[in-house]
Amino acid sequence: MWAAYIVYWWGMASKANTKEVERFEAAYSRIARTVLLITAALLLSLDHIRVPLLEKRFLPAAAWPFWVGAAITAAGLLFSVWARVHLGVNWSQEVTIKQDHQLVTSGPYGLVRHPIYMGLMTAFLGSAISRGEWRGLLAFALVVVALWPKFRLEEKWMRERFGESYETYSRRVAALVPHIF
Image (cartoon, rainbow, N blue to C red; front, top):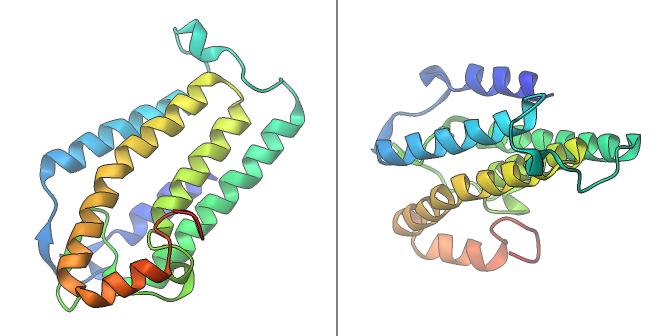
């Protein structure tokens, strides 16, 4: 699932599929996020790591955690793809403001303001459950830490760009978890 998701994501990241950018996030922010996300991916994907505590299980070594986690991972990945498709040419991998940027509030953006982040965090949580080891929960925590500054910056820029429209939208739609946060 993850391989197909990454291939899709990189394929859709070409400039032909997005608008021109007016404002970029700082390079150090993108680099720090990338390092954390790669570390999280390695924690989940390597067969063995040399930190015994992280390889201990928090869930039993049974089939059900794997399948429950796989279902949660698939749901998270599909939700983020739906959001990416729905966002269309307004999407970018980094936090940006596009030329003629539009505030999208329909589709998955009618459920949460940041469905790509929510979907990605859900997918990592599902993968952590599938692995059943403490390193999976550490990977999930790293993803949250990696995405949090991006989330905050995006919120700030959307408020600056769209003003009262974004304030109204943010009062109506939760940021990451429907009806909660």
